[in-house]
Image (cartoon, rainbow, N blue to C red):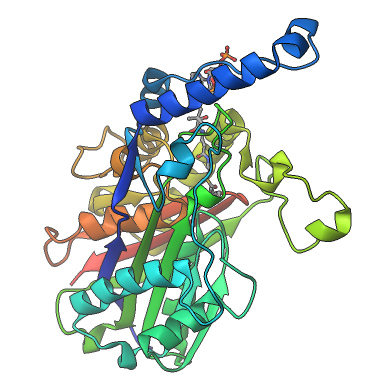
Length: 372
Ligand code: CO8
């Protein structure tokens, strides 16, 4: 059977970034205004006052220091608190496709491949700009790739589930050379007026090229095996969908954006992910000592510290378990791929590692790779 390998990876990083201090200043200005506008109702107890956010809390609770965004001014405008992106005409490339194209170009260059050599494009992300035609098919067309393309969504685990789908198709022969792209515009889906979550997300796009190992033109990571798992939970939820208009509730409802019970997610996902990686390693016949690197989902530094320690049986060295969330925040499915793309060149042939993402669903995806 064909051995699939990751032969290139790429990251599109938006030019604009928002620091915790900038974010908190905007949120607190919004909260002050809200409280002034609702002073009577707050005094009467019918409306809850908005408490202030704090940059110290954000850093200590999450490890996030900054986040990249496609638009900064709309998010930081206390009267708006939402990005402002120009709508695209039907004959223009969509925003997600443009981001994906940038990341894809870098991944293809790293693999030494032309877009025309790709015959499978998977756009694996937690939000898609429209239901159809598929984002992946637009990206396929803009790139000049062949074959077929489709979208998939497993929230934060989309990229690893996409890598599994692509690797399996290459093993099975239904695709020859794949591109898995994960453009994430989390800023368009976040409730920036909610103190509990306004700091969590950022925008980015990632891409990986997957092809038969024996056709790789340069350095490669052989995909030894993949494992995906899901277990239903309402603790991370978004109720926005195509039935929204028929519910006669067209106003901007809170549950149409990202909702989570962060504490519960934290507690429930940790054992799930630790056991998932341990089981995957055991079934693959790999020891935790074999792992030179853990490229984990980037949601919370404390979560990653816990998982790294559980998997390795000791506190990982910073190099062994690189975090990028201090600069990028949570970028949903792209997080573990950014960590991989920016922290894998130094590995030697024979070095092994695991890419692992986890999040809404719940969902967990792990990819065991070996540098060849
Ligand atoms: N500033 C100051 N104080 C605050 C703030 C703030 N910004 N926010 C909350 N507080 C207060 C709370 O009110 C609370 O006060 P009190 O104790 O008086 O009630 C106190 O701080 C502690 O609050 P929490 O219990 O909420 O704080 P935690 O320590 O739990 O930290 C985190 C909150 C950082 C959210 C943490 O729970 C966490 O990271 N949990 C895991 C989250 C996670 O991994 N989620 C995955 C979601 S991503 C995903 O699956 C993809 C979804 C699809 C993509 C969506 C794209 C947008």
